[in-house]
Length: 499
Image (tube, rainbow, N blue to C red):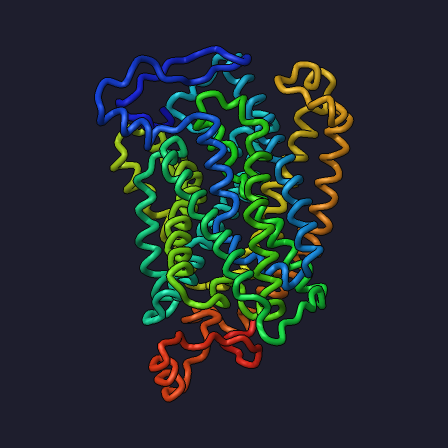
């Protein structure tokens, strides 16, 4: 199954269902070892897909959403989360419709056998709309996934620093780059069952830790809630939320890992609703407690007092970021394997060795641009806007522009959305809104902010937004009192200021 992902534990049979070919298991698992492997490793159900979507969607962005609230203000922060959550769910639905359409057409023509091949988004665009769409989709998708992986490495270094600051963040990036390189041994999304489940448990704990710890902490002394104050900050925060709910660059790969992918239609919406129960309380509570101080602290962990609960949240997020790195990198592995002709190789060792060159540029970029928070906004405006919102909406419009294509479509638009007219109206709105607000204003704001980070901190900065060292006497006094050294809350030092 999926490029050798299934191994010898399951025999795969071809089944005609819902107008196209699916892949299901045949026969019974014979021994306890295989049963355990099957339970932990081989996931193809709707529940696995839901865990994958929910786990992949929130990731390290959970820690930067309070920073976005400080830029947007409370009301705008909540409204943008709800709005982009719905927009992201709609375009994920469009991607699922296009996947089913592509796969049905191919298998009706009997020109493809997908039992040992993972379908990807650029192949869907190629099959439905031609090579020019394929090339554009491939460029945006790969670039987004590349920087998505970079962000996970930056997040790892940023988080571990709050437990152990004996090493600077750049050194931690070297270490976690080596750790994340082990994801080359995970064959496909079909093998993320236990990781997806654990990832969601980890983000759920972290979100409720942020919420409860902020409420117990209460408003810090002299807290102010000034946002929004500047257009640059406002649209930077908005594009970070655009990025939050644009985690479906891997939707096609998750669908292909399902035994019955036509059941995917509402999974992303249900995952988004659950994610909102994590992001809205945590971002609101942290912003309520710390207000404008978050403008200088893009990682929410940096403002909360050190405690065993915070350390647990940091450790869980580190493990989750390793999982999310795999989610972002696995499609890149597939593209690279296809380019060098190893995608259908049954030797996982050969495939793992071939995948290593993909990790090296990710590692290097994380060291060059360690700007936790601002890089999310830049990726959101320049890449997510097209990959996740604009291209799927336009692809749906052009795929079904003819009356014959609409009449013969495998998936008809729901009646409550107004059928084809309603779908076209929503698609046009998505394209215009995201092009103007997400890419236009958001691109201007996030690139401006990103350039300022480079001007302030420089490339290859050793420890981005690290507090300045305390005078020796102050450090000894804090240690003698049994307290952690106080965190820096001001904006007077170039070492911490985040414009």
